Amino acid sequence: MMEEQLQESQTELSKKDRRELRRQEEENIRASFETSRKRKKLLKWIVSVLILAALVWGAYLWAKKSEADKPGEAVPIQPAEHIQPGQPIPGIYLSNPPVSGWHYGQTTEWGSYNEELIDQNVIHNLEHGGIWITYKPDVPSELVDNLKRLAGEYKRKIVLSPRSANDSPIVLAAWGRLDKFDYFDEARIKKFIKAYKDKGPEFVP
Image (cartoon, rainbow, N blue to C red; front, side):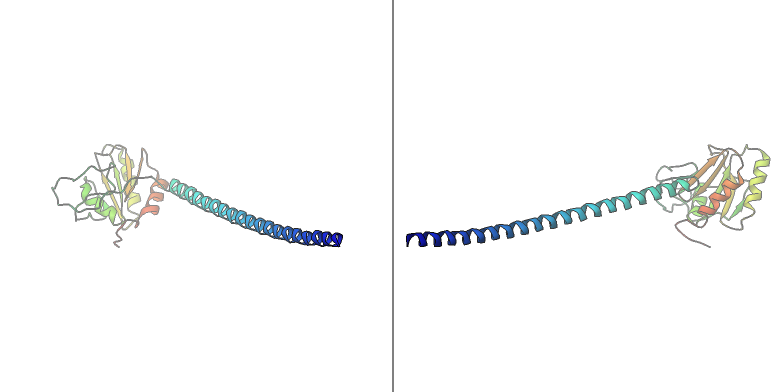
């Protein structure tokens, strides 16, 4: 009798052990599944971050290359505020000649000039998408003739004039852009005009 009770006890204990073992196995499976789920979630997050970083970096490189491919150099844009003729300039222009900033309400007629113009008038032309080609008054007459011929190919949005304040023989100006060089380069000038003509912040036909 005692032997039968002992066997029943061992059998019962064995069933409990099996149930406990199954419970532990189920917990291990759930834990493994949860760990795997978290790992996959982390992996997806890492991949998403890497993709986003790659896109941002690619956009930066594209913008940098695009900027590098543009003619001339960029000049920070200054306030496009109107001032009255004779009024002191409220600040200092960031380039020579200025390519944005304080200007008069009046613009200059498009075309070629033999006399120097007022910067604050022509800045307004640049705001309207114009191109200002200037040259130092002491450059060879042949260079001036070439510039006038080139400017004459455009019916609008080009102003050509001498400018004694220039620090280079030839200067091309557009709104926020500047290009300076020492000799006549027709391809360079036309590339600048094509890139920036009618690209000012105010479009005026």
